[in-house]
Image (cartoon, rainbow, N blue to C red; front, side, top):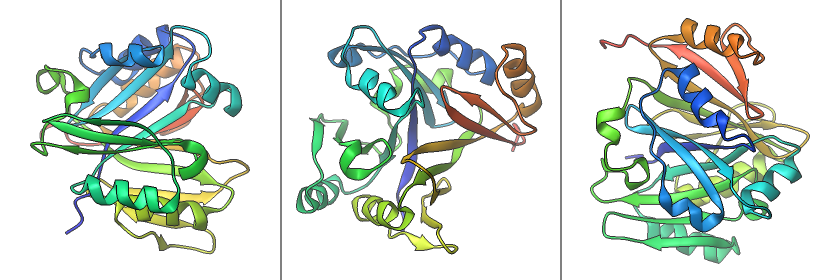
Length: 250
C-alpha cells in the first residue's frame, strides 16, 4: 500500500507581511510560529489545512539558506516540500547510496526527518519525515487540530530541465516509482494526489494545488491585494496556487 503523503508545502519570502496576507487570502486559521526555525535565521507561519500544512518562511538575518535560495531563483519561493513516509531509514539509506546530501537531520520520539540538498535532489529542499503516531505533526504546533480549516493539498507541480531524471531521483527517495504520463511528463502518486513533473527552463516548484471550501472568496481577496489572479489560481511568492472547490460538509 502506498503510504506516501504530501504533508507540508513551504514558501520562502522576503516580506514578513506575506505570512498574514496568505492566511487572510486563504481564510486559514491561526498560524504557528515555530521557534526552532530561528536556528536557520528565519521566522515563519505554519497553517493547517485539514491535516496538511502550508508554511511561509522569512529570513530574519542576512546570508540564510532561504535567502540564498531566493537570490538564486530570482525570487521564486517554492522552498521546500515535506513528505511523510513510513520508513525513514530506507529513505536515508537510499539518499546516502545515491550521494544526495542530507543537510539537516532530527530524531525525536514523535518525529524524525531529513532535509535533502536542493542541488542534489532537484528543484527545492525535499524533506522526508516519519511521524509517530502517523496522524501527528510536530511542525504544525501544539494546537494545529484546533486551528485547522477544511481542505487539503492535492497536487504538487514541479518544473524540471530533465523531468525524467528528477522524477526518478524523487521516486527512489520517496519509495514510489515515477511513471511516464506523456512524452516528457512523469508522476509520483501519493495518498493525497500526484507529484507531477514537466519540462521547464529551470528546476523549481511550479505550483501547489489546494482544495478549499471557499474558492471564489480566496480569489477575490487575492485580487484585492493586487496579486495576479486567473480563473482558478493566483500567484504568491513566485508560486502558482491553484484552487479547487470542495464541499465543506463532505
